[in-house]
Length: 474
Image (tube, rainbow, N blue to C red; front, top):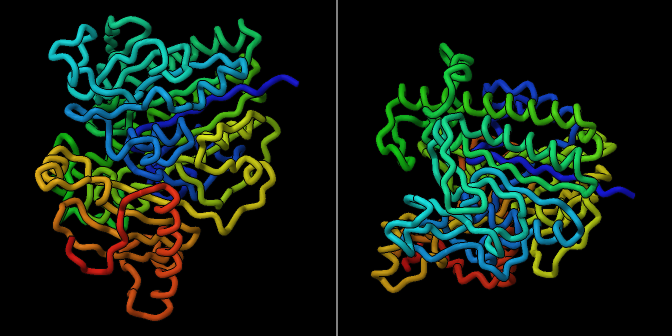
């Protein structure tokens, strides 16, 4: 029996609600909507650690982010990267005879500026050229970069440090490269292919989107019901203070970028159909985490709200029976699920759950839950912890998402913060504006049960985060 192909497409900072099919945000995505209608739409998929590098490490290894060594992003001044001994999905696929390819943002390698003030590749800031070999973890075809957010003027590296500068919107250019790869891999080579495409938009800066997509959002647009623009507490990398008008404009640009992704996604699907590979290819459309865009007075990600943690996950496979899957899945579940769909073995190092039988059989697992985490990662926080002789991995927050509830234990981002707890009922409070009163017996029992689950998970992961009693100072 011929092996199925695999294409995994994921955008950066794209929340699950920003999809027309989700019927939440006013986003125009006709191609993705059509794909959702003929696929399995997974409505309860979450970024275990809603930040780029931690999610990507988990996605590729099937391990929880902290187990894979990631408590923040790969960045200058921090010696963090996906270690050589980690077993990634492309290594498993390559051993099974697959052609493997990676296009777009990688963000799993250590910035070159950590080792050289003038790297020969020209890499700046958090960016890095990842040379051929083990640091690519099984991907043979390579057209990628480390971390760089200039969407209209991107650059890439292949197999030499020579930087490839492009004057074209990055998702459009990467789709061109992907179509060329599929032409060679899908038509001219009998071996199955596995291609990962990582689009950078709609990640900030939001204004780097072609005008033709922005024109789709002229006039007034509604903001989410939980947007609080008067008190935007978190800033993006580019901006701290936001006015209401600026937030509305940024939201338009965010949606416009997603509409642009929709057009590129449509091109890929149409080409697969033209070359006769659509019906023998598993296609997954997803992202690495979401974006608050003003909800709860926040920008960016790294928090436990739905806008940050809930991500698209739509899967189409040969003989697909379209439906909505409500089983909770996290970042670490994606690698074993993909291997299960391809009938390939799962490495012993994997910590996630293979959910392919749930997807194929249509029987949701209502008891399955997704554990969540985050740690202090900004440079100013890391310096504070270093000065205090504390480990940032012991702080931040830990939580769990079930089909009905989110429960979070928050130890804060500073060494002297308090431990606080939050419980949200998603049926009664879909906007998460009213955490449940934990003094009420019914809520206290729910919280205690979920905290027990988190405690077991922490112990199993050897996570040193401590579930201190409420309001106890560190």
